[in-house]
Image (tube, rainbow, N blue to C red; front, side, top):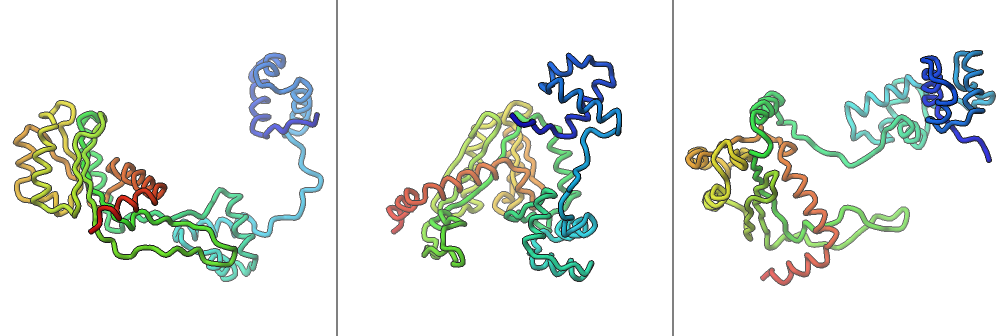
Amino acid sequence: MGRRHIPDAQKELLMEMLDNGMPQDDLVKFSHVSDRTCRRVKKLYRQTGKVSRKALFPGRPRALGDLPLAYLEARIEQSPDLTLRELRQALVTAYAIDVTEQTISNSLKRRGWSRKKLSRPALEQDEEKRAAFRLEIAQYAPWMLVFLDESAADRRTARRTYGWAPIGDRARRHDYFVRKKRYSILPAISLSGVVYLDIIARSWNGEQFDRYLDALLDMMQPYPNPNSVLVMDNSSVHHFEGVRQKVEARGCRLVYLSPYSPDYNPLEEGFSAMKAWIRRNREYVLGRLRHDDP
């Protein structure tokens, strides 16, 4: 049987434990490293101060050194949507180094970078207002909070992002561009689960939200009981005249999210999972929508 590879970090930990007085027999027992390996590493460590020997034939040096790679990392931290072609040109301009795009890709992967779908936080986010919201919401216990948010779906929601095609060809699928009937869901959740929800075949307006709020408040409790603090975004539908007075008249508290901060509402993850389910079950969903559409 060949030798089992032991990372240098583990070898260094073994030597540190020996230096701190642990008997070698105990070290072998608890680390699952053979006595022979332990003696070999200890001998090398005593002679050289290292736990592994430098390779005699380390191979060809990397095409990109640490400095050019650090430059590439700085560029993609600043602009994460740069293409490999643009990164290649940046290297030529900054360091007169011309390597293939595949070399750049492989080098970045070795340093822990991967290309993935972009998320897009709003530039309109105000960090001071987000910090103020965190400070305000921290005064309430988690079991007091009720989060409210709206989402919508139509037959375009079932579209999938990726598809199969021969190499070199574009993946194509004929699809709907007219949305037809639109369904809007408005749930409210707390640590105990769904407090209340309603679904309508249109978008919500102020009058409909007013009626919804009455029904939701019937399910909530006065502060500081469980489900007594309502948290929602500051969209215009949620800002009709008298909304705060309506909530506080029931003995509840109202907290608005900071602007452009959907990441502070746990319902966003639920909506994401719901729409992923719709895409996975596309044929079933589209069949039901065709039945409902006039």
